[in-house]
Image (cartoon, rainbow, N blue to C red; front, side, top):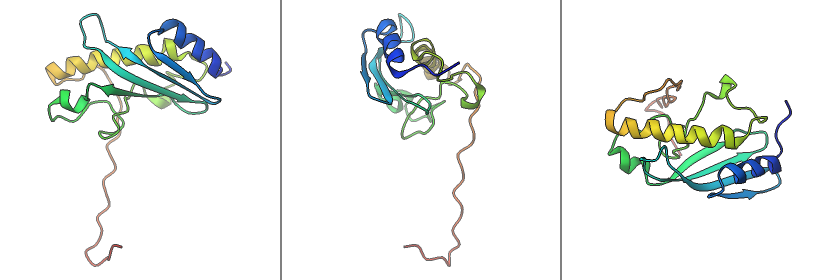
Length: 147
């Protein structure tokens, strides 16, 4: 299937998630708004960005996930500092540019938030996932001078 155009993605987001702000550029779409994992979950400020020929990226802008985690390493994020959410296995074919962001990425974000809230209580991520270990920094011999 051909990729959905940026305007088509915008129509879907504005239709399915009208409380957020959808911003469209020539090759990019952003959605910012509030999501909750369910009717009893806390409300999260979310930012989603999708650039043509790239994968969608999603961040929780508030509340601060590190504060909620109380010193624990955040689960299923691409980096602890950036806190970009890991919503699916990129090579698994779960998301493709022919799929609507409003039917995949934002609902998957709500699911991630539900798993995160359960993790806060149980310290167990109740879903499968594949995460490569961070690359170890190569040791620099002591006789090497750094500049």
